[in-house]
Image 1 (cartoon, helix red, strand yellow):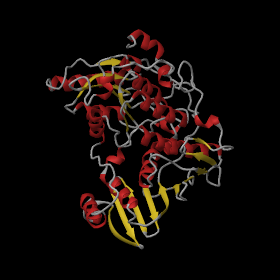
Image 2: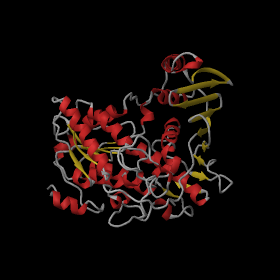
Image 3: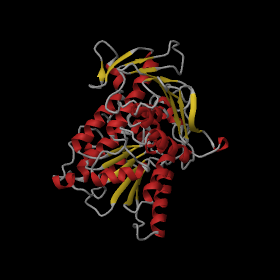
Image 4: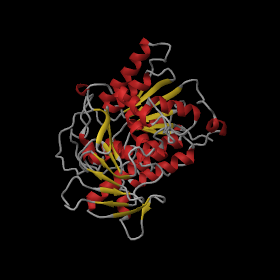
Length: 444
């Protein structure tokens, strides 16, 4: 039996609600019940609008709903969708609905999938509610705000048999796949350490109160986080063309450790073949005030070190692999044998990648998941019901790496971790570090 819209809106504010029950034929169907994937978008700020534009242009998609707590943003997104369908009448109808509350999107039974591009503290609650309402999910990275949410969300995907893609799109960029294949095939020997470059951990929010213009549901923006006065740094009003700095504050994000760390630590996990595992120890820097120098240590002795550098830099017994967006280098026995950094240095990224594949991976035993379009990969997997390249397991465990590193910084403590059980080792850590205090009525 399907829950009624009224019942769903009443219970979805907390995640103790019973899940939707759909006929078994829907779970096993090779394609969604509709001819096209009918989608709703939750959060249409800068990143959300980029994703909306990309999905909107796919013939297989039909966008029928957008949601944002800022009136101007959601109206602009609605106009964007309706304008597109006015010009492309064969793709859809210019009747996109605009909602303030994500629960109104999830209550629609005609929607098959949602895209979530909210601030981090709002990823998990709508994602789980969407899964329980029978919808597939594309959710921005880092997948969750804390470790408890990561474990709960992974379990929710399995329990509801849905498809979830995390927005860690570097895995759909060829340079990162080639770099990880070089590492995984032993081209640079046995890996001893990986240096990952990203910014500092999160800080407590101490922003002063600012006067807020009408049109923003501040209570809903804050959601499960502690209530605090409005400040435009957290939620700039209207349509803006920058990434807001809510991500710097612990209450809403996890600093650059969770922002860029979710990209580069994800590549470290991929290169080390740790997608279904993780570190066993996390060490803070010696200086309690330091904002870099934290270390993730794996059972095989490999250390992943947070420091300035080249994105993800793998050090092996016989060489190095360095990779960042649009850049890659291979060093063997101290000599740079191939690489592309920028066009001033000659060549091209594509020709360099082709050279690396021809010379070092032509008979590779390890071939990694190939995706050349992150969004298309999600759409393909919605149809096939296979795990996408950055599934909930990949995204969840990479997020856990970020959260563990942050907790080592926040508490200046060595953390011993059991990746197979996704919990602290006996005598290590504090259960409070796994989760947060959720503001009522929200809970995970």
